[in-house]
Length: 263
Image (cartoon, rainbow, N blue to C red; front, side, top):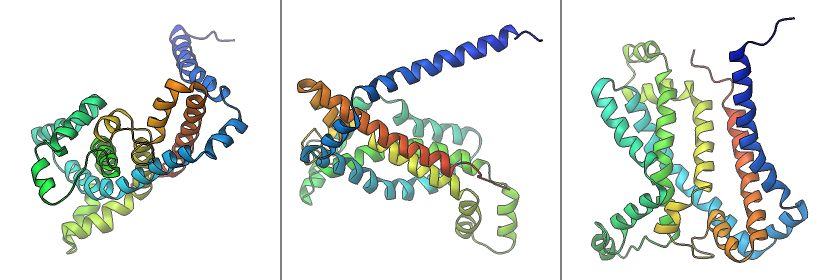
């Protein structure tokens, strides 16, 4: 019988510790609320409002994420060298920016006294502390992640297939629509659901730019923050509810992603 090698034991130990680090808090959160507690929470009007705003804002943000993100990802995948590194640095800046700083930046850009404040006021548009602010916050934070992941999908597309389409008379736009997109459709669907999941869990950027107004801008994540100050048990239940929603979306991502073929 062969004894496990030291490196194999190291890998197994690291994997076990990581599993415990992830699972213990999740199990603790799920055990803090019973299914009956979750059902009672869902029946509350303020929770239903927060759930509706959470889902609505993420769904409203998804079309512009796709509209802006897909062409940007495809274009980035077709750029090499220094230009690509510069573009990737610009793209990744919001990804490393602290969420509260992102909210502050959005407020300074679109707020009443921001860079575009007077222009927006002239056309009667007020963005901060509205549902539109929630949507813009999701766009600002989630779109770079979406573009980064989709760029990797387009990187894997065989360029010879696109060259063949161009030689046969297809335009670059037709090549993008009829060749590149169909080859990565399942991966793109998975990334769209992942973007939806990220938007649902957003907190820091929203609370500074859109506020925490019940029935207007309060998402589930913000409702958890509010409830924890006065009713921790309700916060635990809302946390478990948001965790279950995230799990369902992540399961959908994993169901869509396997079987992706670029051949």
